[in-house]
Length: 224
Image 1 (cartoon, helix red, strand yellow):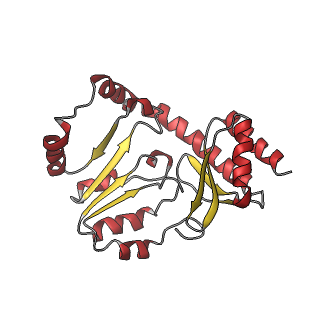
Image 2: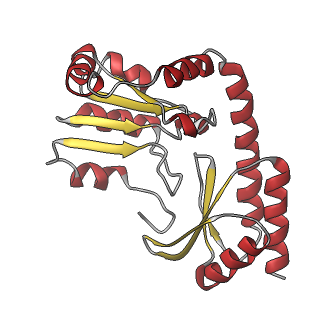
């Protein structure tokens, strides 16, 4: 990752040219970074091997490559109901791929390890009510922007763009103190430490408006 927690598409393509399989989470966890749609499409088309795009956090971004599966036989797009639908307890995911790949998957993996009926029916029910999920995502995007903009008002932090439902920021030498102080107030964030060139990374998940406000006010008070 570069200093702003982004990847250079040309360098990434160069480094991966000899690989047989390319696995990318889009957006990335834990940075929230996502290649532009056009760059990722070019990468899929130019790569000779299998490309697996993990879109676990994709509902919080602005695009999906799912439709590209129709024209690219080397593309597999993985999605889940764990994040945007809030159904992590089901452990239910699915992938979109060409028929040849799905048939091979069914023979090798799916039949010996089938999903439970409860997981399948719950997943179908969730997918049949997309509007409720879309409304929630819109709120999360608005709150994500508020968190980023508010944190950037503090010179003590480097705050990175995100296309996921979380925000990564570098609190530098204060990151352990901030993590501990927030924990003592019942505010839970991820303490990640070193990522790339940044040594004090923390990651906060976008919650309800009230939860986010509590977090931001606590940060303000800690930096006074």
